Length: 91
Ligand SMILES: [Zn+2]
Image 1 (cartoon, rainbow, N blue to C red):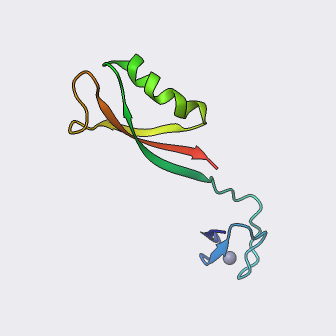
Image 2: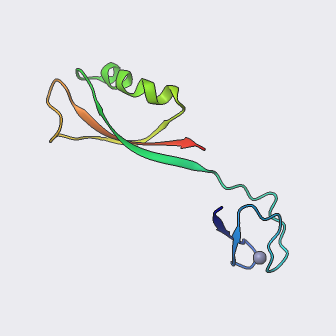
Image 3: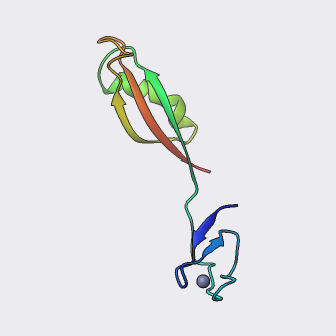
């Protein structure tokens, strides 16, 4: 269970509540997107979009979306770059 702010009275209420217990505001139209997030290090064999996509494919097949990615120059080499990738997925 998580909490959201009532759009009417700004009190904290449960996401599972149908209406606000404080002011009676009906919440059924308020949808809270639920995402889980993870950070993974992906090693690619070679440079270029193809190599990166190959590394990302197993995650994308599991429904993950890439939020951001940056190269980790300390872990990777020129021919086997490592990317730190932030991913999100609908729960
Ligand atoms: Zn309220």
